[in-house]
Length: 269
DNA sequence: CCATGAACCTGGTCGC
DNA sequence: TGCGACCAGGTTCATG
Image 1: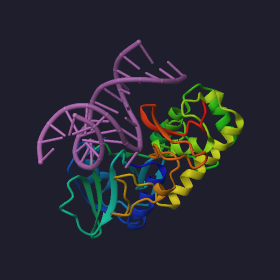
Image 2 (image 1 turned 135 degrees about the vertical axis):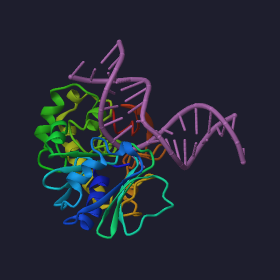
Image 3 (image 1 turned 180 degrees about the vertical axis):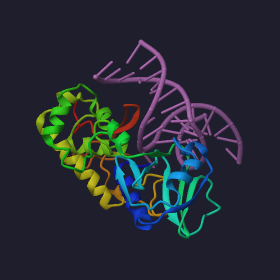
């Protein structure tokens, strides 16, 4: 489901309910969801502890309890939302936590999502790359780091140890805006296009956040709102539609094992 | 170092 | 209507 804009939207939507509150119980319906801790750990380290902050890092939602953090990764179909009452008709609720008189629900059709418990954010930071919406992502950084390796650009942009937050949709979108073919080798992209790529990444992600993300099928936030950035997509999902720049038809390919949408006229290799 | 394929899961869609 | 094949906003691990 979610890339950076969707995770950011979900994070903000649950944050206002939960900051300064504490969880009183947890119920597990799909045990694998808790990857590195148990309900026993919940009892001793999380239960009754104040949630000091909730924030996003990469595609993780972080619950900060000061003495430890709980991370949630939604993977493909995870949904995290607050409701006053549990909906018994929901078939795929993997976990739910009670706080005050409400519930934080974790629903996940494909069951790929995971909760983890850590002492601090250090473990995550070690394996994660830079945040694209900060000044860490600059033209100079990008040029330097595209040139010191030779990777297919799409595969590199999807790599969370390089830049975090981009997934299949926003990678295709950013490459379309920058007129870069997804199979281009990272060390053969001209400066002008690198410059455009950096701007496009920031632009696409921030515009999408403003629209509440992109809903293709599963993604919703706050129980049922959909993301409207789907209306702004230029490449992703637009097979056989006209490119909005040149009237050539968008075609679908496979790059880095992912469905990939390209305007072969604009995005020459 | 880099690319590829499989695994983890369920459900929707498409062609016959 | 039914059934199989293929596809899906992600990540990780094993293999050349």
